[in-house]
Image (tube, rainbow, N blue to C red; front, top):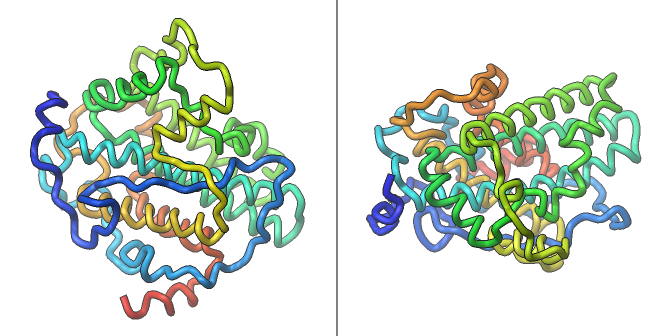
Amino acid sequence: MNIAQDTTAAGPGAPAGWDFGDCAYGLEPLLLPDPLGEEDDIPEPRALTGLDVQRLCPGLLSGPVVAPGAAVPDGALDGNAQHYWFRWITGHQVAFLLWRLLGQRLRGAEESSGAERADALEAMTAYVNGYCAMLLYTSSCPRAVYEDLIRPSMFLQHPGFSGTWAPDFAAVRPLLRGRGGSRWAAEPDGERLRQAIAVHHAIHSGIAARLVPGGRSLLQAATRAEVRSSRMLGTLYDNYFLTLRRPQTQEETVAQLLRRLEAVATDVAANGLYPASEDEDLPAELCDKNVVAYGHDLLTTLSCLVKHATGLDAATLDVQLQSV
């Protein structure tokens, strides 16, 4: 595909209910506190009753849940660089927010037992499921878009640009790398968490095989690394994904998550997850029935995140959404 030609063409029209960014599929900066450290206090799990869910994500909870790809016009996503750029940046921002919430509940699971631990494990599973959904969402572009637009943009930020620089990932790296979830495998909620992490591994491997068939990341292909400070690398990573660091309350952090979940859900409901005309042989990992299920249930997965991130029960959410 010709990225230069596509980016000068008229941008994509906004689907019904779009209210994010300054234009259709526009971007917004993400404000996050400094990454969660081992000595940092974590907020106690509580219902964030001050959040206006009706304003932040009305369509996600009250609108129809449409299977990605259903009733989507042919060519709705084809060749639209702006659309995929929105998915790449905003989907990563959602992942950063989920990592932070996952890290908080991970600490809670380690320090609790009984019903409190079960609640923490259930929330952790929802956050890992949400991260799986974001992996599929951010990687939904055709390979040509990744090769011609996304990978070069990362290279221009730094020749060795790497996801390992993500500041918020450190708190959950052991868990997502499979070195933490097994301790709770004997508990039902712990086993569900372990299964979600296993699917995450499959999706991650499948995406790498689909978008980088040569198997070499920018970091692996880099001949030299000009910047060695981990703090500088983290700042470069944040800067690329429009992420700024400043103190934020839990309510402010979760509000930003809900706003992005609404935008992602509106996009997927209107356009599907993949281009209708995309015809390629997917890697075996992405054809696994568990991975395919994540794609079909993506909007349901996002809806589940609202409950866990806000701590609000279904009845309270229903009351807030009655006037939508």
